[in-house]
Amino acid sequence: MSLFKEINIKNFSPNPFEIKDKWMLISAAKADGTVNTMTASWGSFGIMWNKEVVFIVIRPQRFTREFVESSESLSLTFFDDSYKKALAYLGKASGRDEDKITKAGLSVAMDNDVPYFEEAERVIFAKKLFVQRIEEAAFLDEKIIDRWYPEKDFHYLYIAEITKVLEK
Image (cartoon, rainbow, N blue to C red; front, side, top):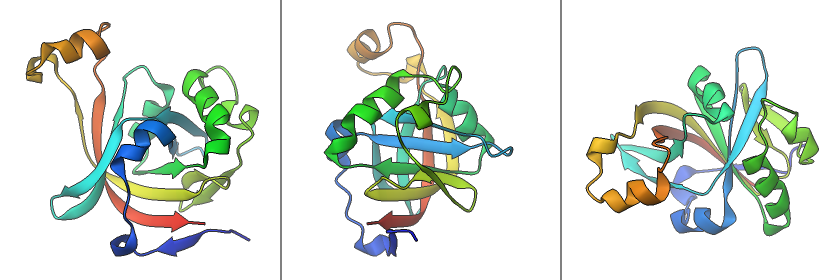
């Protein structure tokens, strides 16, 4: 039996600035049921096209991007601080090379073919609406490129509509 309960999006008050310190996992599944996840500390919440949305970014070389690209929906999961070590590991290890989810000690659950983790405190499910590669020419402050993109591996920006929020 799940310990999660669905909450109304109108009662959800995320703090977009806590992502920087608490981190989150971005997770998706391919059609064959395989799952991958990655740790992220950049992103936000807001309104776009009159919808409640999340904004996430994924570098092109991340294995999780293949999963996000191949699926209609994804999840963002948030954990208490006791999972910081597991999230750090999931941000460094690649699912191309090993079963990093099992090695991190997390339990995958599914909701309408979208993976999430039983150990999470909060889960946000979202349907992709938009994706675009961030382009070098669009930067107004070139110091950002020097600091964050020395390899020119610009993120893909995803905007996804929040479809469900679960909390424990």
